[in-house]
Length: 268
Length: 210
Ligand code: SF4
Image 1 (cartoon, rainbow over the protein chains, first blue to last red):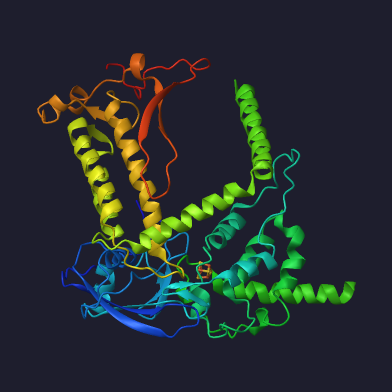
Image 2: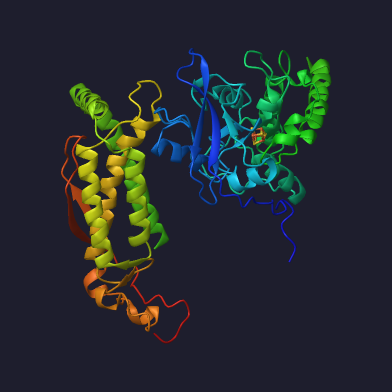
């Protein structure tokens, strides 16, 4: 039996049982200065970074034996589908739940693992950031299918299996923000839309029922901060943990917006 | 049968909507104010507690014992150990809690500690209900104390059988409302299962012999 195409090859695991050392960038309030703390916790097999944070909470003492407060972080599903535990681990934005200590150490050794909040979103406290911007963008593009459920509509339109497969890949987005953290164009205070929401425009516009709002969705990601501001660094493609076909998304967005502009030019 | 179930569902939904709307409109403001006041007072109690027990540690002890003794294979003697442990944890929570964070801005520890009180109460309710139900049903696999160590027997031989006569009923755990800084006392009662539409049969997964 062959493995499913998206199954990654088994990653190497470290067998080291040395204490787990983590350096955490903390911040008490949105407007207070950031500071670093180091923690060292006894090794346990199969820990992920969320369980490391929980272990620190149960004994919040730094490596220098200073008592401190537990680190504030978010986590919900613990299976890399909700995106809430996204933090920057050793310089790369990813989910704390699927960041396994043994695997990190197999590649990077037993040295301290650094944890930082994402830098492209306002900090609330410690590792918790405010990702409202992504949700506002989803509202702006009408990230839903308009279905009037008050009467029986009968079966929905059929979708070609090939199209279904394409849409499924786009539907996997969990609004984690990794693509935006990695993007050189997306900053804390500019208006750039970024890969996350453009992929959702492609997703909802590709649905036969969602199509009715296609023009509005495109309009929402054009103009200032819109898709043409993409610098083509392709970082989003590399970091997306759900492997969305983001290179295809940007290509599609360019074509779709051009077609839409021409159409608008002739019909207005 | 389908149609009838659908009707029941719809009526419940409508009833819930009516209650929901009315409740929000008729509930006096004082009810909400009292709720907020009780929560704020509780937070102050928690912040003032100067004990040694970290809430995350209490949680870990609770989780370990519940996972060990109150999951699929259930043995009363083991679950009584868990029940005793939970009593101890509740005492420690009430009398020896130490809050590792007393900040008032996005304090995860505070939220967690408050939730832990409910988790302990629920753990107790689950364990108590499980101890009382001497039968195996669905995922509940109960082994009588005297067969706990009879590993010479097969699991099927060790377990209590399903007992529709006595246990075809839903366990209800009721607690009288207590202030948030106290633990409620769970009381068990039972509600019959409505079998007027479907007659229960043995679940054998295709096996023809018991
Ligand atoms: S596109 Fe990928 S990286 Fe970007 S928010 Fe969605 S899941 Fe995260």
